[in-house]
Amino acid sequence: MRAVHFGAGNIGRGFIGETLAANGFGIDFVDVNETIIDALVERGEYDIQLAAPGQKKIHVSGVTGINNAKHPEKVVEAIKTTDMITTAIGPKVLKIIAPLIAEGLTARVKENHQPLDVVACENMIGGSQFLKEEVYKYLDDSVKADVDKYVGFPNAAVDRIVPIQHHDDPLFVSVEDFKEWVIDESQMKNKDIRLKGVHYAPDLEPYIERKLFSVNTGHATVAYTGKTLGYSTIGEAVKDDRVVDQVTRVLAETRSLLLAKWDFTKAELEDYHAQVINRFKNPYISDDIARVGRTPIRKLGYNERFIRPIRELKERGLDYSALLETVGKIYHFDEPQDTESQKLMQMLKDEPVKDVVVETTGLKDDPDLVNEIVASIKAAD
Image (cartoon, rainbow, N blue to C red; front, top):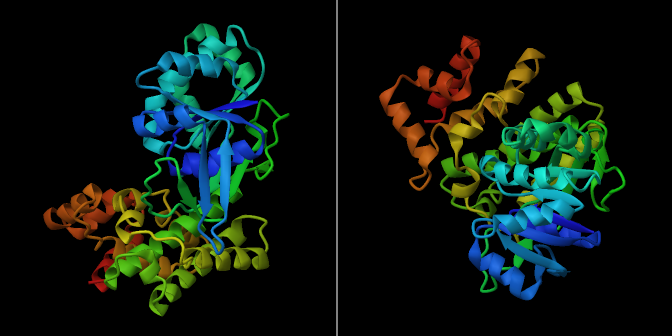
């Protein structure tokens, strides 16, 4: 079996590629990074190292690369016969690769009626369905019915921390030993492919929210709390009891929301959240607070990792005080190398704080919550 995977970066090689290879797939990595693609073509293999005691190495073979900027026609040919398409390329890039995927699917359904799934393994909610919408913009009406019939776009939730790294070997990648990949089986077309190491769920939403409100919310909480205390790395920050206490309180609040909405048990969520905090403490993983905290405006979004749980906790009359404290810290995240951070700092200079809060959070219909956030910003001074 073969897979076409868009995105030959660290997550692509160190998580999705590793899992596909472990299931017997040969992989056509698609990317515009000439160094990585050329190395994949030349060598056809690479190594992964687990950022954990023992630092176990995993060998991945049966791979190659396609430079989609130089050879889009090769990508189309690969899509025509592949057994699976995956992405780990970044949410913003999905729109960019959509026309090429559309071209490949158009060529495929004319001669190949084997069912195919396109799985976007991105750090976003509904990534595959978002990609589907973008792909369909470039499909001719004459092929849409066949694509509907033979191609699925099942949403997925993925979770693996990749530390900052610099290696002489452009293909070598270090990843944490924890990994989770969940696919919505209700949206699949090819149900004969069941990857070992992947969980298939009839409803993905509980798993997406668990990850978003735990790993994403928690990681960002460590970053913003650590930044206010003068730390520059996650590793430094989690050695401070004040940071650990803050993330523990935040996760207790998001846990109460997950318990109110879904069928998780209290014990399993407590274990999951303890594991999340231990992952942040992993001494083999080094991550800059500047990287984890970047794009603060996006992270303050209405449906993002802080405002959404705050809204839903408020609706249920549940505590969100620790989340609110963390949001106040985000408005003080002044990172010179991050464009969004500097934009936010400028907005706070040019506009009333309340207007900035409404603009960044979308909370135009909840003035009371806006006022609470304004108070939390002032408290964080």
